[in-house]
Length: 462
Image (tube, rainbow, N blue to C red; front, top):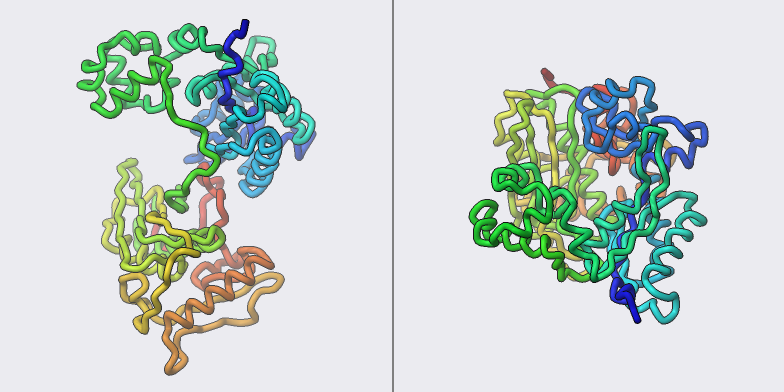
């Protein structure tokens, strides 16, 4: 008689301390030491840490100042996003050997639907153990695998599969945890309510007022009472999850909804002049990522967080979708100019949404330099090259007679993209990004977890 494990076709694979484990893998001298990946500065946060660091109570999202206070001898590393992306791609290559239906939800975790692999590879729990072994052999890293009928339960099961901290140090976890259909509620209900998707700090406070601390407590609350407390949509969803119901399928491809960059500064910046260089750098990076992904977008958003952590956003939707770093910078700069920055800006972000595939988008050219962005253009812009393959001298574009400046910039930016594809993003870029240390382009993931050291600025800072 079957125990129902053949119905548990949703797997959640979650790497152990992924960023920190990659650093230890690449530098064996770090084995057994408390390693923390994140921003080491006063405003940095912990992104990942080894179990040796967790023994001191350190966890992800903890302020780095607090982590350093708890473990002064910890090894702080700023992180190497490109390396983590590379290892994430290796993880997906492993998972795709077991099923074509792999849904990545972060660099270090993914859902896998193995319904179609049962006849070839065996029951889902056996497939989970094969995946764990393959990750260990191919990547020399460890992972936890949750097996269940639904995404929610599989994700919670993978958390239960992880190593356990003890007074004597980390103890290996089970590695694979299976939640059988008959065990779903007995597994789910004792867990803290914050383990559910959709329960953030504000919702948790409202639930606490209702006397709810566990998922079982939540399941006993009448749904109409729940909706009055946390809102109709959230109430219905939480009631459904508390019953173990999660109808969402594993989806092999996830639609990208926005592309953006943001950065927390080591000190607040209280002038537009001091911020505009950062806008150019972020717009350049966002435009580059859009082009690499063959995407264009219509809505440009600037995010500003002040020193008191009050956050505002300003958006503008252009008439024609764009991917031009220069045009993005024009719009983002105009949005920033309309914001009062005198209180001091702690964090700045630039993003693009309303994305479309370049291959299915018709691009309409205009003789108006600013028409593409819906904002008047700032005039000629200089590009400089640095390092191997960089341009020799300065290149000024947009001054040739009888040539549409927008068309000229489209050609120049295509050339810049080609140079960067061959020689790297730091080989050429806007002259506004040149500082004492050369061309300072923004790479994906740098300063993602807060500043490590104060960044140079051209404006007044607080």
